[in-house]
Amino acid sequence: KDYPEGYRIFGEPLGTYRRLAVALGMAPDTPYREIRAEYERRLPNLIKPVVVTDAPCKENIVTGDDVDLRQFPAPMIHEGDGGRYIGTWHAVICRDPGRDWTNWGMYRLMIADARHLTGLCEPYTHQYDILKRVYAAQGKNMPVAIAIGMDPVCSMMSASRSFGRRNEVDLAGAVRQKPVEMVKCETNDLLVPAHTEIVLEGEMLLDKTVLEGPFGEYTGYRSDPRDLRYVYRINAITYRNNPILTMSCMGTPVTSDTVVRSMDYEIFLKRILKMNGIPFTDVHVPLDSATMMAIVGVKPTYRGIANQVGYAFAAAKMGVYKIIVVEDDVDVFNLPEVWHALSSKCHPVRGIRVYDEAIDPSGLNPFMSPEERKWHMGAKVVFDCTWPLEWEGNVPDRVSFKEMYPREIQEKVLKNWAKYGLD
Image 1 (cartoon, one colour):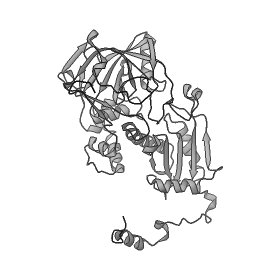
Image 2 (cartoon, rainbow, N blue to C red):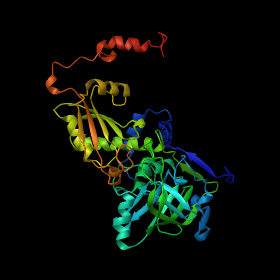
Image 3 (cartoon, rainbow, N blue to C red):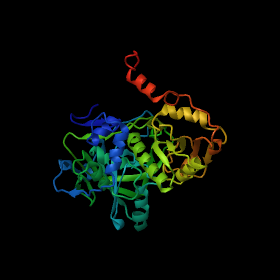
Image 4 (cartoon, helix red, strand yellow):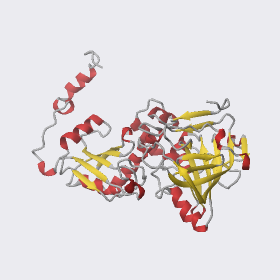
């Protein structure tokens, strides 16, 4: 409203599996498990970017006192938010020159005034690590570039949280299966994707803070208070003609963030299970859980396997707090099967294991106390939905369609389902 023609907002670029499939160059109706398998197949094949000198993001260039962040339609996303958020689906780009490592991270950004932004910069993030370890140690402000409206795969890699100290632009090349074209900023040496819609060039200030928040977050709650946060001073803006501002309407699932993070978490948790030698079938992080719960299918060949899963996940620096462990006869993607296993097989006392000294990397957890959130004090719980091995020969028989009827009967019924007048 009241913005010039051509100033647009695109909400939830990856808010559905269909959009995720299209971003990967796959058919829109590709089943999710096939999407994840293809994404996982591409990830190891890193492709370095290429640097260009002419780029669409340079069609308009504004510098110095002419900079005004309010020229873009940054929305007031939720009633009660602390301000207008221009950064909810973007990349904050910063570089560790000593390690030849450039980090892309998706850290929320609120407009403070015409030339200043503010937002979260939490201790467990790569952004905070580079700021403190490299720049604060030298007493220098940290150069940053904020890319808004990148191609969907570049945005995916910015939102990802499971790949350690690796250059997200190389990962984006792997997933795109071709290099990302990059161009140098006008006022610092950072590189940004050449086809980005809007680029904000600036620096994080060491000697200034302003009030930021509150903000409705991916957990579905506004759980962190308004507080003093780091400040970004913007020294230049470059943007395409008729720029598109991409955003995610954070809150109760599903959002682009939960679609991307759930897939990344599943891949990351599978790696943890493999590293610990735990026999498993698959891992599912349901979208409706806001990525705070995981379902793990295991092959219980020895006692205490659910407990082993719990210890392995408790040490992981990621925001999965409730883990449901089921046997390999349960499809972890079939939630009715999972809920039945949870309600019928998990003992209310012996089947629940609590790990109360786990790390909470986000600090946004609604079920933690304000003190726990402040100090990132976490906890995790495992619901063991496996039969005790000592029950062999005495395990109750499950009475279900796939267990209680001969294969030929099942196939006949399924084949004729529509003929029976059933949906």
